[in-house]
Length: 189
Image 1 (cartoon, helix red, strand yellow):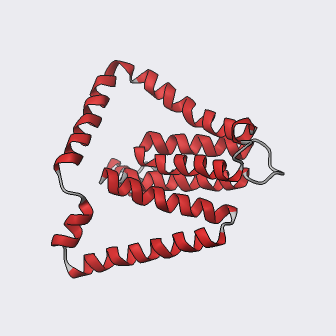
Image 2 (tube, rainbow, N blue to C red; image 1 turned 180 degrees about the vertical axis):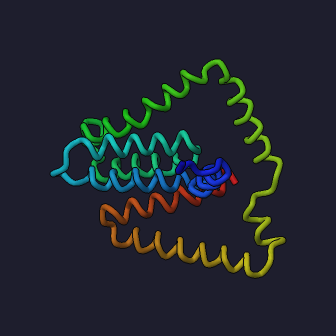
Image 3 (tube, rainbow, N blue to C red; image 1 turned 90 degrees about the horizontal axis):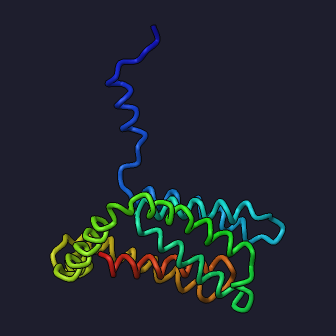
């Protein structure tokens, strides 16, 4: 009758699911980045700012690493408009739309907030008791893995240097994204 077996449906669901939360953060973060860049155009209305904040909020609710995008947007706006940052309507909309779903989610889990705080506390304790991942990579990994990370560092350095030298609007944003990515990667392991 045209109905597919349950095993085919569940296989399809598994195949389309993005498994790692970091990948989901990247997808939602880059969608947010697209709308954020659209919102920088003076001719656009407020819709790109709202969508950038919404997708950034979804990314943050998926995984805390989305804070990389949030910090980058914030400091990018501070660098672009140091005097007018707090009075720009688009900035207020972006950060308001970013925080509303997070507050709503916090309200929904308020009964179980202690479990979340315990989890965060345990993760912070683990972070202080284990060696940093970068030291583990260079002290005990294979030569290929070490070379991968050296290439990552070189590419990051070149991107950051190029962005800092050119100092265009978009290059400053790239510089901030790269710096905050490495900072959070190192700090939170």
